[in-house]
Image (cartoon, rainbow, N blue to C red; front, side, top):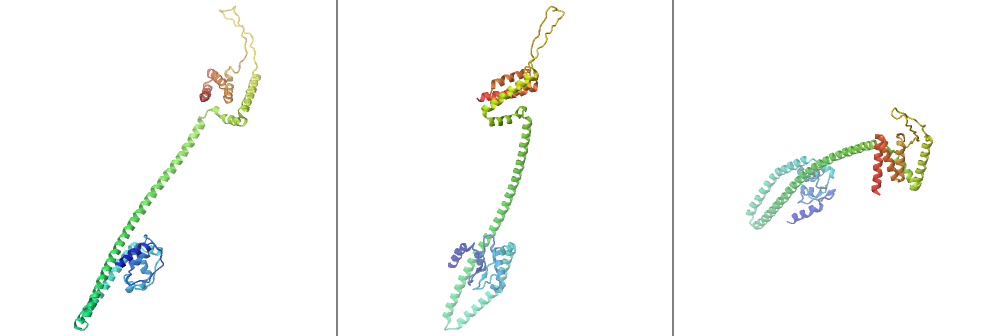
Length: 344
């Protein structure tokens, strides 16, 4: 019972220890116990560790069988790579073949032991002086053998359970690795779809920017320049410059189109022969259709200066006399004036 307790305490303490040697071995040590203690981690099965240790220490086993571990031996423990190099299926088949061969080899020995025990009993019966003493010795030997058989059976049951648990663990580990691979594949597909969506979104944004640039009103072409000039000069300086520009523009218009007085025209009709009409007037450029573009520029200048009333009056005149395109541009500017007034 103490040995069984020692095994249960020793396995969790040394299960993950990195070992290079093991020993010296005791008479009761078996290879599967050494494999449990010496394997680096749970990724190596017990059968793999047993086969790897047996191959590295063949001189430490009698009858060239892994069940015949000799006492007082120092075992060389292979590395994790060498243990993993042994396939699981090969390790399991090798352990099973070794167990079967060992069982066959032990049968003659058991038979010889039984014959020897019978001989001792027979001789003890004939030996009067030592009869009681030999019977007592025989009883002790049988008792020890029974205890040994019970211990071997208990150890064998524990080893079987550990091997079964290790096999189940390996199967479960393989399932988890497969599941992780499937999940990683799904993640990669989602990443590819996300990349495609981002590329499509970028293309849509570029197309939207082109459409907005095409739909941008013509009057907004000067807006960046006016804004930068206002930021550079300040509100007061900007208004002064705009006023000077307007005055220069009016002087140029007045110089290019001076006032002209029409001659008196006398129109006589057959109905009213006795009535003469004198027609006197000046040519008003801003009031004509040719002056509409100049009025649009003045309206923009008034908007930039903050003179909303003057801009509104100018735009109303354009809505009355301008062309369809000019009226549309005037409506856009007028909507901006109305938005500015509402915000204030």
